[in-house]
Length: 251
Image 1 (cartoon, rainbow, N blue to C red):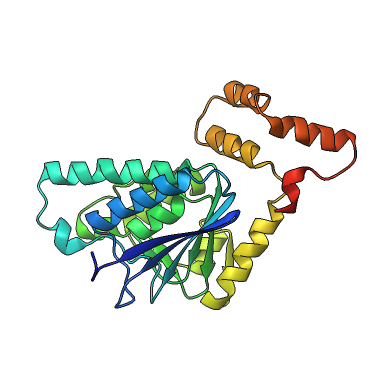
Image 2 (tube, rainbow, N blue to C red):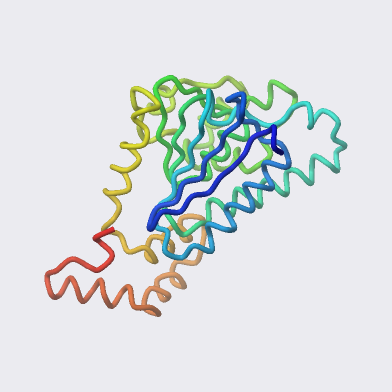
């Protein structure tokens, strides 16, 4: 994979960064890159102190999509296996207890859009294009993107974007709710992501992880009960009674 897309994980205290980069600046999701992303997500899941993670790219695009040349030779069984693996990786990314943000510097198409949809938030540069163009190739999105798009936008809006296969601009994505914020240039992504993280620092890390689990269909009474199994809720309620900031709010 040395000449293809690389994925690096950096952890700096409470923050983590997952970076995609390629020598030619065009990041593409081959099976090897997908597997590498799965390894990185698994490694991040073991970093218990990490509260926030940004997924970003270096180059001309965020992720241009899947490796079509690789997929062209697939049998139906190969395609099914890729779909199963892709869903597992995206589900693991979506299920991370930390807050995740996709910082979309350029085109986020196909698998790149699906990765961004598996994140909690999406912030895009104004020049970015976002979409699921698979139907233009006689395919469908295969890594959970159809369902996630429908949950974010509603089924009818998802139909229009998936059936038509035409990417939309960052501004259009903002207007329909596909992205949370648009910035003027890729250089403004990092400070905007940091501002978002700071706005969420008051939430207890474990509580946020449990809330994410419920948002993904988890059992709410079970999750609420788990809040009382650790020290975080005692610290939070104690801080409220004592009129002080909880310990985790300084992150």
